[in-house]
Length: 199
Image 1 (cartoon, rainbow, N blue to C red):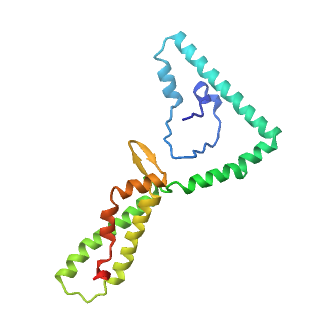
Image 2 (image 1 turned 180 degrees about the vertical axis):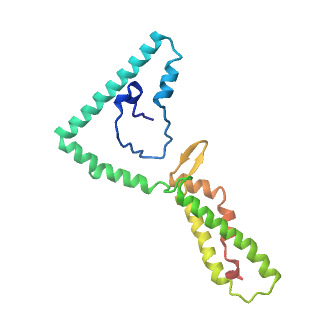
Image 3 (image 1 turned 180 degrees about the horizontal axis):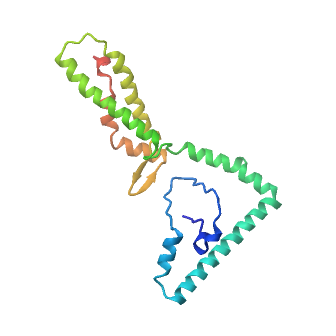
């Protein structure tokens, strides 16, 4: 992992605005300046001075590295073209194609879970109703689209829905597919099978 914004811990006047982009799913932990000062107050004076100096040295070294990178970009246009060109983008594109697109806490996962829940509720109501009563309504108009939704759900779970294992996000499609096939795949196939068409 890495850190950013450490300059704000030393002085309230060092507040700067900036954008930080994560290439993969990550957890971001925040340490406010007030909490930092509260922790520092538990140390004796000479320890506080030593810690503050250590943080200041780290900030200074990191600023020097960033300055060198900016200088390289300005003086070496080739380096800038490499960063924005095909080499990095090609690698990122291939990596993104091999990773599941939807995280467990994504909005699409929430909406899709509601859709599959409504489909299950409908099937739980419609099947006993048709067994108990001789209905003339063409239920196939509703059944077939819902069966198609269940087939889409199998595809999404197999390739596009990442999962969390022991606190770590698993988004590699090969691992996602293996995890799903050894899990709910058989049950979902039995559920999604259109038995009315097979009979």
